[in-house]
Image 1 (tube, helix red, strand yellow):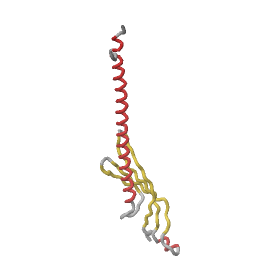
Image 2: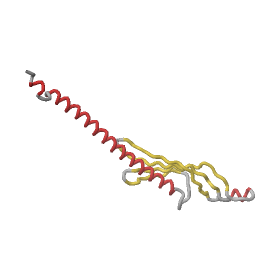
Image 3: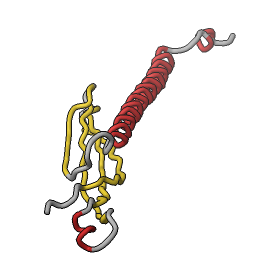
Image 4: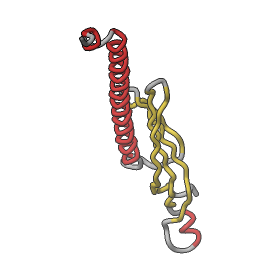
Length: 142
């Protein structure tokens, strides 16, 4: 006569091991999902910062005279911007004799760097775009 208890079902130990394995698998799945959501949020913040930096870079030199220096400010939603403009070289625009050239306007090439920064996940993140712009310096005073 065979032993009926051997085929009665799972033991308590087998059920506990199965629950532990399932809990570990669900925990890892949850951790992966949370990590994916965090990465998507950070990626969206980088895209927004890049868009803001492009906008600031495009606005430089439009409607105002180019000057060396630094400007900064808040851009909303926790984004901070900084624009740094440095002269890289210059060339006289006027043609003619030396006196005419010396009194004429000068084309100046500026190195421009736009940085947009924000706080995320207990760290400061930033995007920097660099470019060049041409500005015209007024004629030298006599």
